Amino acid sequence: MRTPGAWSFLLPGFLARQPFAMLTIGIVLLVQHTTGSFGTAGAVSAATGVAMALCAPQAGKLADRFGQRAVLLPGALVHAASVSVLITLALSGAPLWAMLLMALPTGASVPQVGPMVRARWAHQLSGGRLMPTAAAFESVTDEFTFVVGPVLATALCTGVHPAAGLIAEATLTVIGGLLFAAQTRTAPPAHRTGRMAGGRRASALSVPGVRVLIVAFLGIGAVFGGMQVSLTAFTQSIGQPGANGLLYGVFAGGNMLAGVACGVIAWRSAPEKRLPVAYGALALATVPLWFAASVASVPLVGAVGLLTGLAIAPALITGFTLVERLVPAGARTEAFTWLTGAVALGQAGAATTAGQLADDFGASAGFAVPLAGTALALATVAALRGWLTPRAERQPEGRVVARGEGHRVPVAVD
Image (cartoon, rainbow, N blue to C red; front, side):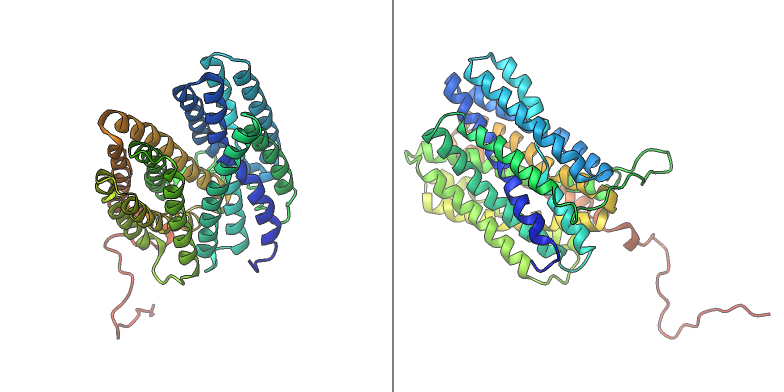
């Protein structure tokens, strides 16, 4: 927090990223109210999430090339306009295809403030030892955002007007986006150069480690999406729907606590070595979820949910820390948006799959989704862990990297 200029982008950044956590629940509550169908509401919100996941990396690439301000200002205005049209369509009883069509620009224009904040940390710290601490702080901030945002949106939609949650989301996007964009002193510089030999501009996807991290973060998204739907189905199946908020709060609280712990630890091992261990712990933590739900024990589900939450933060933080080591400065915002987009995409897919499993095989079946997602991510990270080592630190096979003690260095002689 003593990093020069940190508070100047952290406070407006927190305000500008709050709408991100309000958008999905705001759409669900509004569309369900106007159509009476959770299926329709889920389809519109899913279209928004997929559009955001696919377009976010392109926004990040533009921010790296032209600067964050140049992308954030028009993006915030387009997003607010798209949300306004979507609200109008929903309240006027428009058909599903029209709302799906407008959901695409709504999701595609979501300002990627979280990745922009992380890019500013990387620029300010310049690869210093505090980067893991900054990544941990951002993880805690994200989790706090996803605790406060849905509660605020729900309160506005149920207590004021069904569209109030989305109206507040659009308003905060514009206000927060303008305030954040105004902090130009802490923004990383635009990198208009940085082309590869073939003349194409370098992309974060050209870094093999980033591709591994994208798959890994799909697994994290599977945990978030699977837990949200499965906890809802579980509490409804046992006749205690009010326990859903408490159980998810315990899960999110575990993530926040672990994030704080990761931030205060001075890690001695390299992040590429910690990542497979972190994913192994996350996969193991999700194993008892199905059993806990099968015995219909709220305390047991809460305890396992807490354990799962505690295991998420180390994997998430270590992955974000690796971006700073793997990706050149001119492509970091793009890299961060690929990872956050992967979480959103994994979350959307997991929520759909977990819901289908819960409908077909019972409430506890949805808890298999977090386990499957993290197991696939762990297998990918373990198999391709060599790609997570920065290129400068790799040694080709067969190369002599050190001489034995006492060996003489040859010198040229006449």
